[in-house]
Length: 81
Image 1 (cartoon, rainbow, N blue to C red):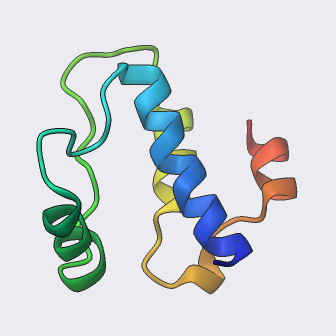
Image 2 (tube, rainbow, N blue to C red):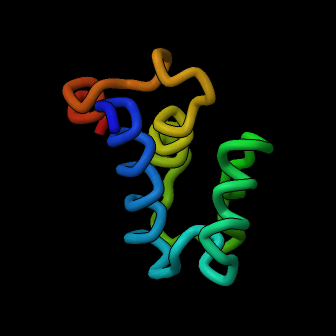
């Protein structure tokens, strides 16, 4: 566990808060692991608005960057939001 993995988790939690649905909620943990770790997949932007402005979606996507060193810090997240 690292700060960059916490930032990734924050992004997933933020998406869940906006949509009231867990990312890939219908999949097993094993399937989610395969999507995220092996296939580098990320959730698509929901079709419904849910209050996810372009700016907020951009911030959330930055938390999921494949290169963990490129993800924002929590201090940066606070400034971006």
